[in-house]
Picture 1 (cartoon, rainbow, N blue to C red):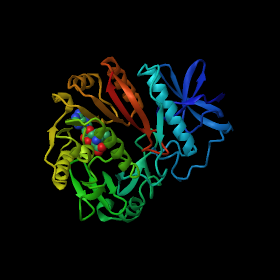
Picture 2 (picture 1 turned 90 degrees about the vertical axis):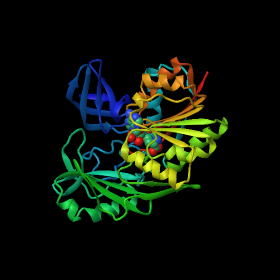
Picture 3 (picture 1 turned 135 degrees about the vertical axis):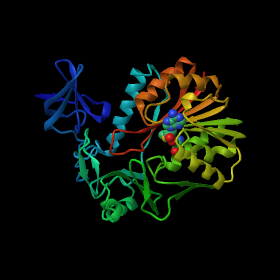
Picture 4 (picture 1 turned 180 degrees about the vertical axis):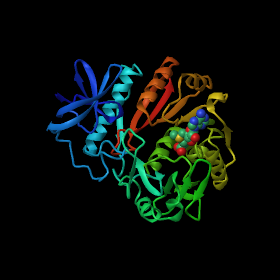
Length: 384
Ligand SMILES: C[S@@+](CC[C@H](N)C(=O)[O-])C[C@H]1O[C@@H](n2cnc3c(N)ncnc32)[C@H](O)[C@@H]1O
């Protein structure tokens, strides 16, 4: 069967229509004429594979990684980087119209990654029977790898070193976490009930202007090493504008955001649930000699949200959800900075915020994930 790809949708798949129903097809570019085959159906949606590219897009390029198409990590390497950014913008616009039900919104700025390769601060590899690798696309089948062109260079050197490490060789099933600050790496194997470090030191230091952080490979860290300072600066610009007294950092990890902006506030409430991150956050607060950050530990869904002028929220993929939006709004914020890594749940939350009389004032795509359909959103909301 033949069809033309009308756009790129969910999961970075191309979309065409067959018998009036959408067919999702990976590794194609919008506008391409393809020969395809249906490989599955779920409810009223089809899944397919491209058998032949009949008319290739001028945006199509040769992927640079030998594992592309097999490894489940990248799905955009066959598309020019500039065009990847156009696609991401269209995905966000679509979700804001469809899910957030917005007729108008601020112009979406795009902040590209300073490099579209070697950007990942951290890599989590699977260990299976003493070998390092990833899962294949849409499956739990293992594929052994020796490098990942998205990972920071020192991580790739570490993979070559650790693939023959006795602790890796003797491990049947676990994960290897490798973290880099661009100079040094730290690595740990995490099994079902144990953690074993492969490096003598467990933490690596990151510094941005006069602030420093210690991260272990098991802590959450933003993915793109080139955009870490960009995220901090975007946040700081908003934090210093309004002369706010109290701030709140929801889903705060190791305190990446609260610590950077703490000097502009009398008090910051920092909400986090993961013990490993809370431990690191306490250390980082001490390291920077700060006295005004109060950590509120535990599942945020069960917490009362304290009154604050300024909020920064940075949830996992699932987003904030309606209940928490209501609690945030009851805390009476003048401004909310929302970092999101999922445009669908972000748009759902924006729908809830709109219902509570908060609207979008700024909107940017911050491309923390080149060569994939993922992207970060930086948004600023204010009360109408
Ligand atoms: C996307 S990360 C953001 C971390 C931090 N803002 C940063 O920039 O490094 C989300 C964080 O939310 C935390 N988290 C996930 N679910 C949570 C919950 N129910 N309550 C509180 N924190 C949660 C995770 O442990 C993680 O640190």
